[in-house]
Image (cartoon, rainbow, N blue to C red; front, side):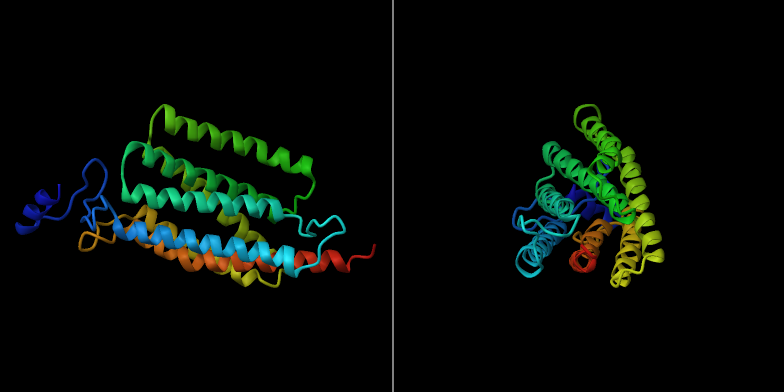
Length: 255
């Protein structure tokens, strides 16, 4: 594949995709996309740092209830988000280093699971859904849809076109929810939310408008990974601010 691309380059032809994928140069035996591997690993470390800083803030810096539970009503949901996000970036790094059917399915499945849970989180936080029964009613149909889609990709057909449409639909929907909430809420850190929404919206364009890898290393997907690094740091900063904001508000309420 790389030899053929070398011949095409000599006669002035542009790079083409092979089986739907761009050709990348090998580095230290890494099969494909070495830059994407490094950026996925960096995103994983940023997610871990954000999750741990959130954990330390809640359990060691903010007041706790008499039963040692947090006042913040969305603690468990953000813990699940952190675990799903780290899982997604782990399999992204594995897939971009070894592109085989199993790693591709694990990468796609973990990304869909993360997007689906993010969609649920956006609804629950933006609409302040705190009752457990109401949360189940919101989450159940979305979890069923995401699970069905993952099973379809893994056991029927790994349809990249369909998967891109599903991921874009869930991504756009949650960005719209966060954007509308940021516009109406008086949250003190809403400016961080605005930056993440705008940044993620622009980053999503890199998933849509693809281009050949520059010098065989950096393509649009790798740049999407790079864009997520500062956005993830800012996102966890907003989450920590939100936990402080809600904890303070609950402590001020008359008992």
